[in-house]
Image (tube, rainbow, N blue to C red; front, side, top):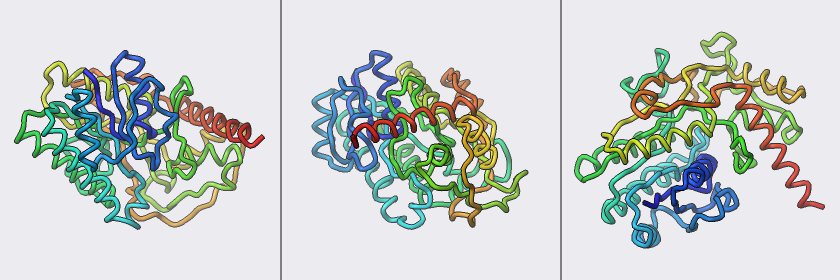
Length: 332
């Protein structure tokens, strides 16, 4: 059965597309290419450029490919941007997802895998974060994802639909085979920004907030390799096809690293020093967010392969160097 991957040309979506191709699973992509790249998608996969809120193109894809399973990545995902443009985030993440759910259900889709976020938890008072903890987002991005989770839950209750919601923690790294990676030049993810500083693409790296209640004053996050995220989606697909019930699951390793620790690892792996500037806190950033990942391992049988900060940084650095070399070659 063909799988529809929304946002399949984006950072995480393209890794899922390569994972499905490696598994021999037929898949089709819808992506508006606002932040995605057509060349990140395996060449054999049918590709449709468009918005998931466009019911006409979505209905055509669902009908022509007899889609019964949707893996939904398409979204805007930069917390500070969501604070500046909350209505844009609600439109792109929540309203568009509602249109996707409606059209998919009308065309007989029975399985959904939804890309959510640990931002739904907000400022957590205990660690690690479990799936039963209260949800209290501190950013419009987190709220837009939580609203989408609620819509999916309620739609599934009213229709013959099962789903897996995967709440990611901090995704980083690149495909170990270097087929795809985080390719947006203005990405705000820490490891991406740090490796760019290490190879001279950025003149400096900013630490946003140094007065948090953490051991070194900087934010602590649970960094997870993007290839392990793709593997979790593949496990979720197998779980749903096997008749699994709807479930919400954290995707993290259960261990946190501070911003300062990540910077030191990037310097060690790259062999380069670079300027680091301390800046004020950003709106919407909790102090600590670390996953309890026991449930995803138990329910999906997920076994991460790249649970190592050095490995994550090594792959991110290799990808950034590949992008820099390609840019230099095209300029000749």
